[in-house]
Length: 141
Image 1 (cartoon, helix red, strand yellow):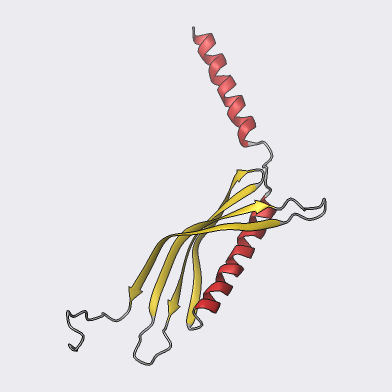
Image 2: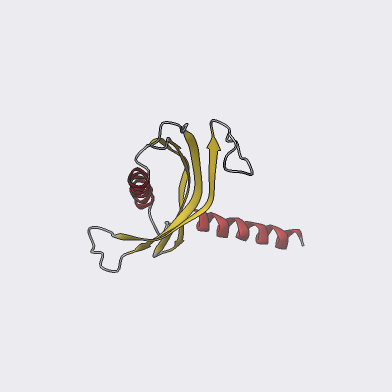
């Protein structure tokens, strides 16, 4: 009985070792390129939509292979947003989400093309640096 248990244990080790050390469907260089491109796209969109935004920081950013044709990128970033009027104080905006990137069908042997397909914001948080006063009537100061 101990022999059978030992054989099963060794087979489980060999199978898991081969699974862990098998080549990745999407290589690490592609993952790094997708992360860099998505970060620059996100920064560009923030600057276009909120010109007063500054201090854009990515706190978490990682990618995972969904299948051989798709990669999912998870992110958490924040930026300081000072509205364009004199009375406003800067607020820190933090967003969590993910994006889906799919391999283009027209790729050639020398270069891979990836299409930015979906973008989801799961959590949007605003931290006010100066408290806001909320009153039931519009005339209260």
